[in-house]
Image 1 (cartoon, rainbow, N blue to C red):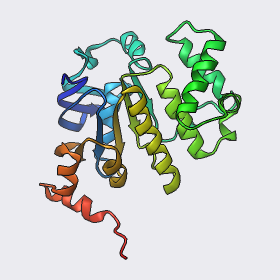
Image 2: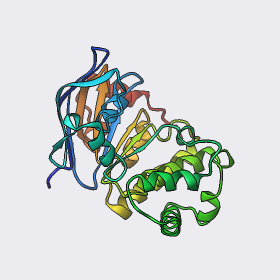
Image 3: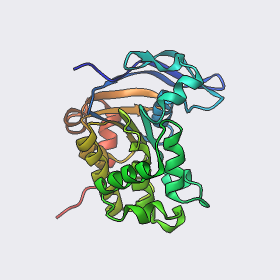
Image 4: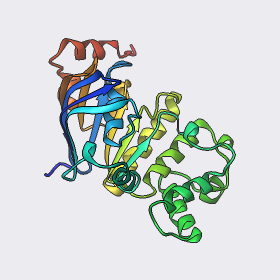
Length: 259
């Protein structure tokens, strides 16, 4: 199976200081990769690099990030804008913070969609409501007419998934999408993301420190520490038979419930 995304010995620096070194992995169509590690390990930086979201101080200083044969760091900002949305989608840690509080959800989703497609308001509404229904919202019109603050944190995160999926990207990057949610809502968001993969065949890269989320979702796992790869392999291999001491330490830190 030809990979859809490939990182080849990628180094990333902020203001000339290297924060990620030698990261290599690939992602197949419809596959879920989990990137796990403690805070500051470089997890989020790795996925932001693919979408050109490192900011003015960030730069890929070595290596390549190939998406369907295109080396993403070599693309111009205009070329990246054409890819971000229709090809590469992102769910942020706090979806609510990414919405403007004084505009309805629907108006913001429609504006985002028209940046890439010539679509009528009626067609947008039909498509948005259909997508919202697929991820568990039976009252799509009400959601679209709501302001972000009228939705709970879990609902905002699910709408964030819908916003990222509206243009049907090939890859969905998720940056700590469950960290700000309680356990029951975390479960719901994970189920919605798995449904996105099942429904659309979307590849997903999820960044998290939650081993339980990784164990539930991921096909393969990349463990990071201090900007470097520690371990990489299938979820079963990495979580059940870790080779590295750092991975074993992470596993040991996961709370266990006794009978």
